[in-house]
Length: 91
Image (cartoon, rainbow, N blue to C red):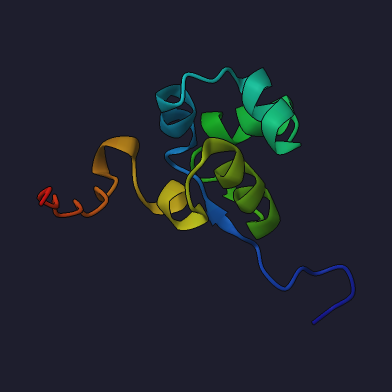
């Protein structure tokens, strides 16, 4: 690998805006919670094909309360529901 090249280019975040809005967060709120600048968040939202580093994806996902995989691959409406716990009967 040549000097200055990255080992990984990351992946795009096509659902970032949908997740942010689903959590009722402004870009500034997500920026404050994740440590990712509002300008970078805006760039990802306006160009959903732009690749984000895995570090950035992790920070954004944590701030949104979801896994990095969920944020990168699922819209909020496609999120797999958590399994229901069976109700226990009182004795």
